[in-house]
Length: 206
Image 1 (cartoon, rainbow, N blue to C red):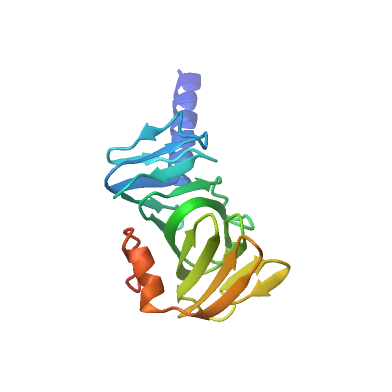
Image 2: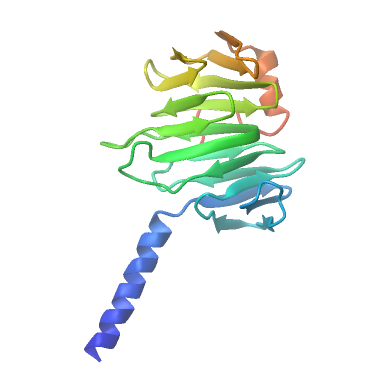
């Protein structure tokens, strides 16, 4: 009897830990799901919300949006026609999470956590390390852009073409496929490219 009770407790404890570190993919509208193969042959649609498996691509289709909730209360909002691979969440790791944006657009709201590492966002053109900041990233075949909505000095570091950039609120870094880099001020025209695909731009996501 004791062994049976112990076994039940261990199973319950395991489930609690698994649920606690889970990455929750929530459908906002349209067609949302996840897949392991880039070609989408194993796409699984999510009608409401589901735990996103480690190393799976979170996917939105046309006119679709989703939000990925992380265990530390950080949020990643996905715009339409977006595909992003997401690593396991490691609460004490450096980085805590790695997101590879293969295509599309997203917003990140990375929360601060004592003793915790950064989030890493990678594209085919750059890698960004983020700690306690909010911003947007858009990736296309010819150019990738990171824009800071709420970024203190030193909270975002972008590495591209053997160079390092540290944008702050209201600034952007864009890297083209041929290695060209542009920096400047976020304009309404740039922000509109994100809002038209459903990426939220208000100051703070809850």
